[in-house]
Image (cartoon, rainbow, N blue to C red):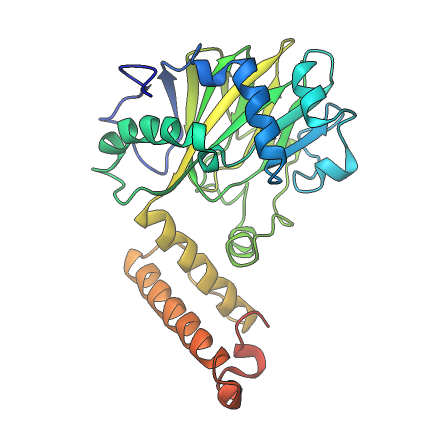
Length: 304
């Protein structure tokens, strides 16, 4: 069912650039599906399919985002954490809420509203998703990068969002991006005091938020309050091309070459993607024909 006539995210369409950070506003504060009763029910359903992630409030900006749930485990169960979030000393993320039958239409409703505004400059919205964050006072989301474009919206409480230009290679290097896209590894993604000086900082409160492009490094510090925020994310044709080009560069670098950085030549990036897809398709064909596996042997083998 439609909760709001205007389920909107609002931003300056004239200055929108898919690879530039910008502030946004929105109309979702107070939405029934983002209130605690609904979120408790959602957390129960998502926990049963392994789509809840949490850590405690001792995690810092430079803590490993990947390992935080193990190095800084939350003390309470999922339901206990969300019910007592003010005192739970925890950060909790409800992942891929679009896979939940109740929330699927909500996610589509919001991104259906956004798509006509972003498509003229960034067509091909796909792989839509949403993530809901429920956070104790002063808890931190450690520094990391993601594949998707992201509208992060504050629904309850206040937090400070630190986000970095996705094209700033002093923050996230070409090698870090290649490893991330090729192996889903954030091992080379890190934060230090010098990098922090390059952050764009947003003070988010209910009704505000930020647009963060693909692979924009970011970390978030909650205020002295309970917080609820939601990220609506998606890929586009351009993000898929960038991903393929970084994957191709990863393979080239493994061969001892120094590939041209992604973004310096759209034509070269496109060609790299075409070649990579052809190679992967060949690899899949070969994998079905073991007698000919030597075609992709040695260092050229996919995944070697």
